[in-house]
Length: 401
Image 1 (cartoon, rainbow, N blue to C red):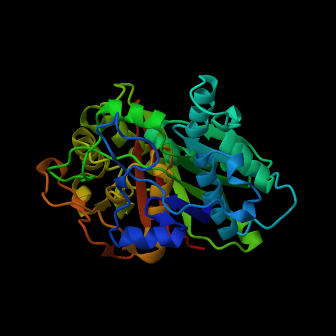
Image 2 (image 1 turned 180 degrees about the horizontal axis):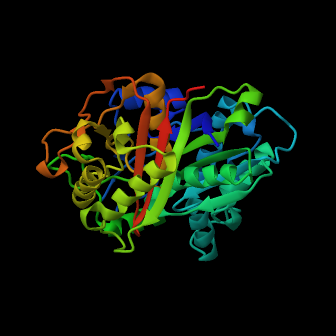
Image 3 (image 1 turned 120 degrees about the vertical axis):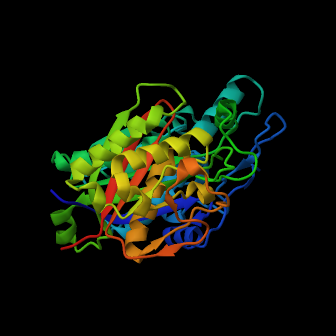
């Protein structure tokens, strides 16, 4: 069975909308700036990737007060993807379309408002605790477009968005859906920032993936949405096909809550499993969109994992890490990086890894440094890893009829 991508949508610190995001990404723009959403007096980390200029699309028929900001990001990205796939215009129920979304914090901003109100520390706001629940965005998405297929929500830390795409594939392969709206989302909140700061994995300046002077990641927010569907279903509708989803895999390190497995063992295995699922040899991969967080241990072990999987071919594969520009988009990261991988295939352009100045002997890959690179691409691997040891990988191919 062949599964293809027919729609995509993005809300990001680099801009909202697929083409706005892609132009900024290829231009090496930076979406990281001082946080404005909450008071920073208790925090030593002040830089983040906030979504700017966002307004809930009026076409959704929802007032902004009705839903959490994180849910709004997901709804806007989903609207763009559904329109792109030409699935947004029907008023009829769509029982063959499923929903698989991913998030790390759900509607935490709504949760904060409810808890503040319950504690008597704020004015009554009418905040709805149900908007905090992890399923709220999936509920909204399914209800807006009457998507009657299976509905799942994953939370697998930083690998969530990639894993959601894989689970969407499995629903289609199992015959439980003809198409799936999938992706990931998250919003910055004071609660989330407290926990992320406690990890002490953040930089106070820039995200420098694979650079010798890298000193941490910077977290951000947004959403990425994709419509994936069975090829014949897409053909029957006359849908535009961006790429084929060739394979995916997930595993976990079973090793440590925050440290990567020694030698990148779990990450190497997940890439090998994704290749096996796609029926491809390692040398078929022409570009890797890396997890590339900019932390000292992650980038070094991801390099080890890539070299373990691809052997001598590893030094010939262009590798990029878009977190240098977007920041780490948490539950949205894998979905947005998958979208960047697909657009690289579409346009024959690899976005850069910015802030790369001093090569690190421990990260001796062909890093696409600071400036985008042109080149026809047929097959791209998007790699993700997460706190708790969760790993996920997805492989995308240029569509050939």
